[in-house]
Image (cartoon, rainbow, N blue to C red; front, side, top):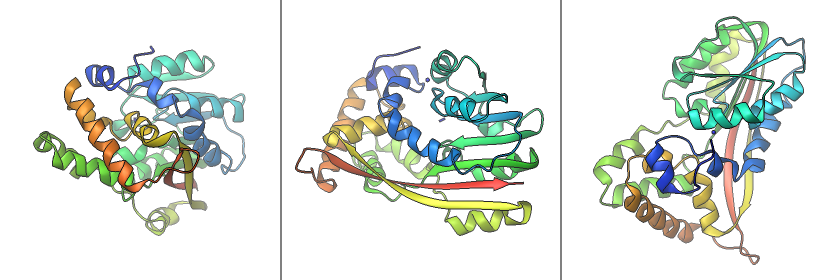
Length: 271
């Protein structure tokens, strides 16, 4: 995942090819809410080593340092931009630059926390099995994954990718998106290896500032794989077409807000 502050624009994000922490943190409270909900369900026990996978700008890492006081908390991310912000935000934690798809902890961990990170990886089930193996007995793997592939917000991305002059570049990206499984699939996969599984789904409703608010939300996350392949002019055109598509499906409320549905799947596995 998949924050040095940069200009809050698609031009800068496309030019750098890196995550834009300013865009991501524009909705910090909404994004961090799921991390809080996940953290609240981790069973308490003595904890010495905690990893935060796909730590981003450190908002989840900060929560972990407060909850596991005295433990070593290590954030893992491959984005220089995100890591620079995280190090400044949470100086008490340690941060390392690694691609979590190929990462394994150098020693057994007590808690591995992955908030909105593993769903980016096509083989995330295999990775989660490896992460579970890397826990000490009684350790916890806590995972939250957005489950919005079938929401119109994401269908509109795929439609715009297929309809524009960039289709030959962007359609393969749309086809490569990982679809996460149902709750029972993950339960069946991990039950033989866990002494306890807590699994649930929450649909958050985020009131945003019109259709541009929805664009801004995903420009800092889900739209990145598309925008990274476009030049500045194409980015502006893509976002304009995406905003028009959103207007067809998300009615404005009387106060001008647009309600964004955002389903998320959670589970906490105890080895």
